[in-house]
Length: 228
Image 1 (cartoon, rainbow, N blue to C red):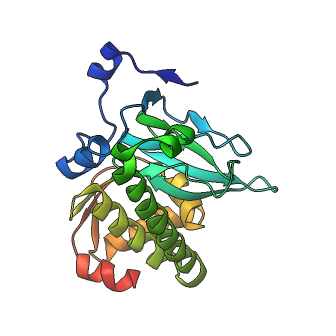
Image 2: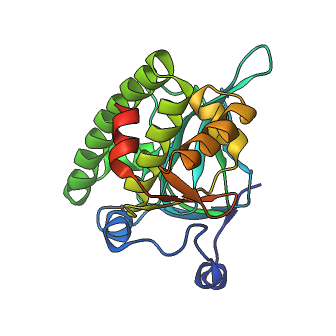
Image 3: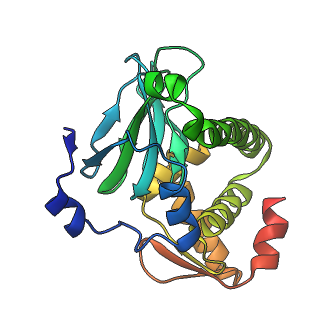
């Protein structure tokens, strides 16, 4: 399921969403401790499972990762998507409370908690970055609670498109690495509802669908108004 990338594998790896932009690449390489282990995962491969020991945290180099939880009745809730430059796998204790899976072929750097904690002066900037990651994660969780708890289906899809555009570094084009059923499980909607809302946004001139996983944002002001 999980393999360490060799030099030849690393040179031939192609990011799922195209090349990492310069700011994301800087975040990937500048503060990451040298002890990190490069790893690669195929599409839909499990990175770690719920209930496992939380010995590592991960930084996304390329590809996309979803964090999810399977509910007792068989439904799945996706809690977050992680993109190049993002760090994930932070836990409040030593146990994983969610699973993490690669949405697309994904390249990661794994960092062992014990090594980070015992690291010297050179890793203090990275530990400071981890604190920022934790705060951003809290803010994103709060936004997600508001999104699912108070917004209707059209508002959720509009907010999702704007968020993906902002995080990918493209203002008016969204390349969706994840399938629509992943989007549905993230937004607390059904697959049919997501497809219907995308069609409605297209009908009102807010977006143009340029394929199953590509949308051009034509009216960002309208989308922003819906997402508020």
